[in-house]
Length: 351
Image (cartoon, rainbow, N blue to C red; front, side, top):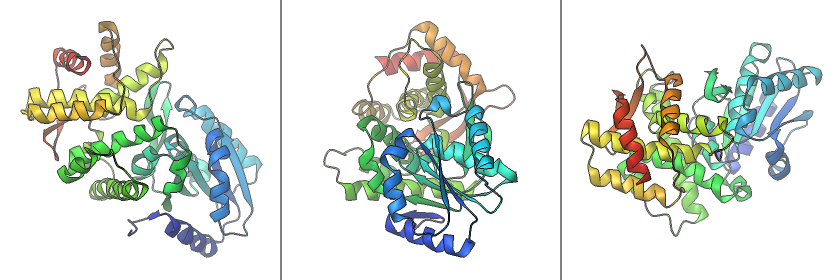
């Protein structure tokens, strides 16, 4: 398995990290974990880490609700109290919350220190840890504060996936489905039949998913055009995720669970606005329904979700911009959608 520009797979990642640590001669290494990765992933990581440099572990609470500036402040204080300087290295060992927040902390502490991402969830492996996006939520609004800054290195080691509950694996698969829909019909085809999936198959699918995302990001690192296609399903998906996060009477949805809904909705909107083939829209709906439990929304809830879309980062000049599909692997940017059509999309999804 070849490495992909700063992304190293399995044993190659630890070998490269060992060389990097020797070459850079860091003053101290800080490993950022959450409660889960401290318990389930840290010992495996430390057993592979070859260094004589002093190591400190900083733990944050697990969950999207802690991906905020208050948590950053706690980590900044911890770094300061533990003697972190500009020659320190931060290693973010965890899912998307840890890699996003840890990357932001590293990028802003003393105006920026080196950091490495070691994603431990499928979602972080194929999405959050690749592409240089760092940041935190503002209240329930996703990723409103942050910047683009690439880690020195990303290590993707599928052994960490053995620690994941099934719903976390499914959450990561949503982004893999998305990569096929926006970039590769052949990859989408591979994702349609996962019934006899082996770990080797999963390794190969993760690799291809990272390759797809990396190719997009390399062509458009600051999201001027092509990189926006990675937001397919996210305009409504993020709004649904935020809505469920801030309403205690609703079950909180994992990122991938919300994005899966967003992709079905975007598929319907694509049929209505761009003549995306109806049978392919149905295929998206049916395929995703095998992995993600259907959610039901009342009319007033949908209205609140639609209102939340005005905070989407892709909006400009007061317009809510959707990424839709003309066909599989043929995305179209900046599609404007009227509210009435969004309500019909929800009816299609729930029907």
